[in-house]
Image (cartoon, rainbow, N blue to C red):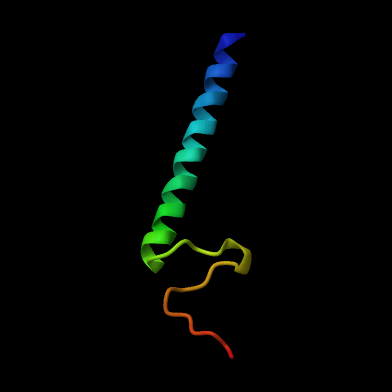
Amino acid sequence: MAEPAVQYDEMVQSLEDEGVARFDAGRDRRGEQPDHTLGAAPASAEPEN
């Protein structure tokens, strides 16, 4: 029963690594922490008002 647990841990770790990489890419692109509550916006997006 140990083998499925190892596979699960590896899957979770790969997903965490991918999420961290995406977060770092978004933060580095904008030079600040991205606001995930507003959805994805291009770096050159201007405020509407």
